[in-house]
Image (cartoon, rainbow, N blue to C red; front, side, top):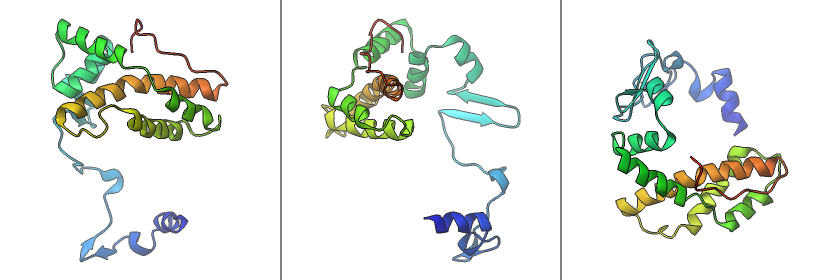
Length: 178
């Protein structure tokens, strides 16, 4: 694998400027300037003017006036929740923050100086083994799984930080915000 990094850095081999593959040039514009990476109904970016919008809402307005639960709901559903929808979604998140003890044991078994993202990746993979709907790939089940994972991520991040600092994990408090 070090060969490919050396090849890219030196601009030799396949990554050499002007090199072609099946007759097509392989060089890209610097920083991908002017290149559309993909179309999305979720977010729009105007880098020249410093504008980022989620579902049509300015990110600065959302950051100033919306909760985590409101933003997640907006991204998933396409609109901001009304009071009842927000209360239901907040209750769902609060009720699904717990992480199985076996997953916390995996976190505790990692070296304290391990990369926290590596620990998180491993813990998220382990969560899948304990999900009651792991084998159900229906749209509805996948939405519930995404919701549970979203709720559990905060608990995992806190547990990883506590582990790295020599402390035991703390159970989530459903009375607190996300």
